[in-house]
Image 1 (cartoon, helix red, strand yellow):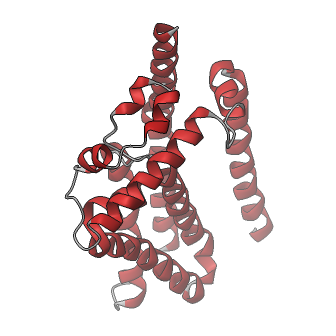
Image 2: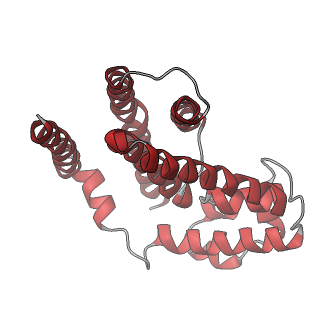
Length: 231
């Protein structure tokens, strides 16, 4: 039975990864955009410049920052004329496409440290859960991979309300598991935990298709239309 469970879980993971690869390759425009991203591409080059601006903004007002949603003011103050060689669209920007740098720039050192503390707390909780309940280790590792993916995403982009709703739900579920395990609450059946994990996985998959993939495609077509209009 144990081997069968491991096989089913591995099959589900492999099936999901293969489906994602097939979808990406079948979508020629999306595949071309992903394969053309390099450290010298315009997208990456502009991000590096804007990240430098975000660092300057943080150092200018390092304690409390520029205030929430005020990055555009910092961008205007420390604007780098090198951005002009890419397009006139880069002359205004309200997000540095890095949520960590944006938090430090707009909320200062205090806000930035508290933001990082959220991730530190999450991974400490997951580590303790995996040590105490090795039988359900895969559930905690799945949650951990979700937070790692989230952190990786917001490192190269900005946060969104729809994304926060998903990550807050995952965080609430993690708190539920942690409190149930360490605070002396009634023991939750393994079947119930697996049912919740399965429902969350389905919700995540559907949300990825309805929100994530469509948002990426919309961004791609908008960028393509802007480039066509410029030429």
